[in-house]
Image (cartoon, rainbow, N blue to C red):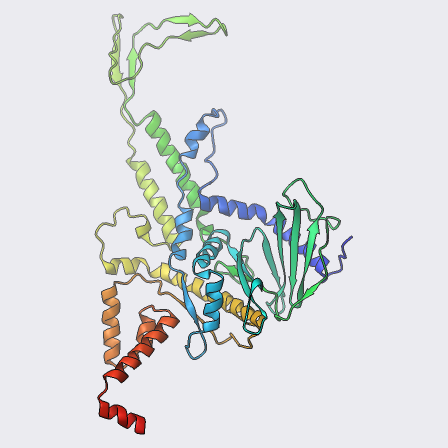
Length: 460
């Protein structure tokens, strides 16, 4: 039986585990929207089941581009210290943990699921120069990880990672605390759903202390707010997404059943017969629409005609209006839905990007702070005494500028005395490339200097 005393690892296991279970339904809903599995528009009560397949075709997924749009603009180039010098240790940890590619997976989960996490711990196979385990930095999904903060300080009080081990057929969990961690396992189970009763878990080894000084689980959140839980990027436009799906379904229905001119006949005497299987009287239909069909009747006052086709332009205008509302409210550039945007200028593109770039800037600020926490934990894991409070995460410029515009701006800044390292940084080079460019430029200047001036420089 676990100890349910508040503050103990057992208490944290059950508390965070139940919270992890309770938020799964909402995470599933957001993920289904991101993947395009939106709720089907409502059916008439007497609709046939065959109409379901027709409904599925009405789903038009705009939630995914809304979530992916900021991901395309988020890319960490490197980390610099308070003086702007590149941090070689941070680069080594970044590359060793393959974060160049995995950072995009992290951001995509943040935008689609409102949060993701990074766990820092000892690497099982790599070591630092003094033999201490190198940092292992892993991106984690909110289905498996949850963090609780101290309401007084805002610091992380505890965290939980829980998952199903499909090899041993057991549940596993780790409770992370500022001073160490405790592992747990369940009994062997037949199902994959983790239980959260006090009798379901047992200790898996002793409490493992660490000297990281903080809970080594860092949350990455989608534009967090005060006293509000984070929401996915498309949370504010879910009603519009449902409206778009319903509008598409209505348009498809109109196109299928009334958009094409329907024929009618009056004065024709239809033959009737009795179905031998059911005993019901049915009417034979000799007039079947077909490009090669010729309709004829022997009746005296038979008339054939056509109904007017349904005008679909209203449906299309409604669809464009809904999509435009969705993009405006989510601050997604309008050119993601081209519509009437044809041969637009670069200035127009920049104007359409204003709100989107402001939103990306908010993401960079929040995610950058999270990365600084990660590197502080990585330094502690590597045994390096370094304060990352002054560190700065360098992001790639989210603007899509023409290279000639960038070069022209750099030339003008150089003419007023900007140093080469600052120009290279403004042109989007990584901190390592900035240092290399400045070093090679200094070497080239030294080699090209006259011999006398070089000797004087050496004598002085």
